[in-house]
Length: 441
Ligand code: URA
Image 1 (cartoon, protein in one colour):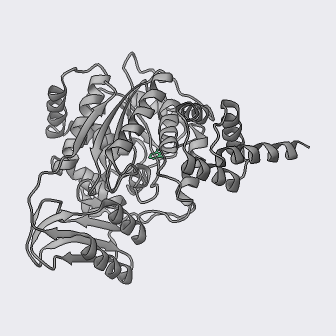
Image 2 (cartoon, helix red, strand yellow):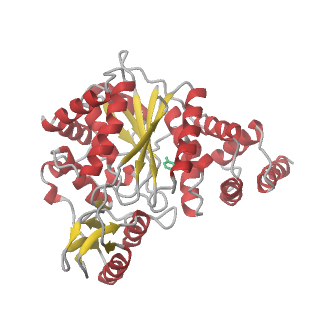
Image 3 (cartoon, rainbow, N blue to C red):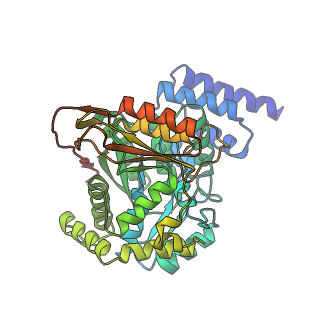
């Protein structure tokens, strides 16, 4: 009898969304509760998510979805001796190693960091997969250990462990396997549920825009930013969104340990210009929200100083060691495992690099094994693509455009041909903007 009522309900909810009707708070809560405890099946959730993807949600539905997802588990109430917790999250990108650099950096300036990250999603990478490429690093600690770590060293970075927003954990993995990622209500609720559950009082969001982002144009990115700012307001979490460029991959490396290596170099002072601009902008707002300085350009100077004096690097090492990672890899990046095949891609003509489409680069990195095709797939730590040129650079025929790291020479050849097709070389000089806009102030 119960079973029949349950089937009827979820079917009615799917039908309603399929027919472009608005779901009530109770229906959304029913779905989240049922999917989290397993009484609603993957195929039913997949149907509803696809209906949401196709037909959207009102602001009210999106807020109710975010709160229901946050309430699917524990909500942490962090308090670190009067200090303000400021969290950071990206809406996703290719080559996005910002969290690995920025979070130890702000922690080294006294902002407590309690960061719950995700795995790769669609063609984008995930911080958790990157952290796991550091031998020994444990992303799956208990909530008690998470809190203890923050009290001890001021920073912890974990995956969606235990009982924090468990609904998002399931929905995130399911969306990834049914091509249901690029949706404003689904992205907003995924991010805000995690941020609300992990206890930060204030939030800085990197809303990526362009070819390698889920939001392909600035109007959609603004809509997503506004949606998350409103959810933040309702949940009493001050939220600032920084809109950043994701037309080409961020930095040079795309792939798990390849990006960790780039992040370690950045913490040693070698930061690619685009990574530097994004890290400083987000970091300056994190310091402002933490009441550690109102002046954005002064805040950027403080951040740069802690790169220069190695405090940020030392905080990163402390973080890695504290969560079981082998810090000798941070001291000596040549220790990271390498792929069997390392293949250079050389330019067939001279000119300026006009375009490096980030989505395609992300998909090629996934094809090499850096991301997943199926929910249960594991990722390969060492494969990926390291660019040698960025948009705007001058190229002479025969120059190395990129280096492919692969376990399979057939795959490497295939990726080389694709890269030569998609990296555009032409005539023209232009300036690339890395940070567009800040919303929420
Ligand atoms: N990051 C998330 O946590 N969720 C999304 O849906 C997209 C990016």
